[in-house]
Image (cartoon, rainbow, N blue to C red; front, side, top):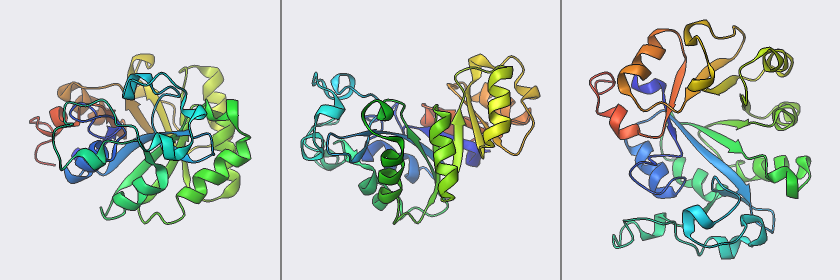
Length: 246
């Protein structure tokens, strides 16, 4: 069962989210799936951070998009582990290319790379996709590019390069029709938006439900046929009786 859990932004409950520290700790726990988020620097480099603002994760009141990559890489994520000398190099914002280079050493890993919608407020969609693909060119692990933006999924599919995952903003008939049209490999949805997890839309995709921290609930959903569970509290689930034995 453990190999059906997705580490949301790495081990984000223990370490600063989306940092190399959080991501590698998740990989060291032998999680088969890890998710991270992509925004862009001013000089069009994909960097691993969830928000388009630096405030929440670094305390600096500035847009990611107003900062060049050299500046971004100098910022530490807010963390209680700043005094741990062995961790200091792992708590900066990192380029996607660097994260992939580090995670390449973990075999049997699938990395979900979420391209955030703010990218398209600053750059052309083809440029966004091309820069992300360029950052992934040396990936030895499995890559799935995901997004809330269906146009990003469509653009990636035209490149015929990586598997895709569409993140649903709503679980309704309109989005069902869109899913049927764009045919992603994965569908992601907040579990709170789904009325009957055991009766999810059938299709060529695998289902990933997220915002789940309760181990017994996660196990129940998997038993009902959900393919993968995405969680921010990977240690709690990992140590639970439901997942401790793999």
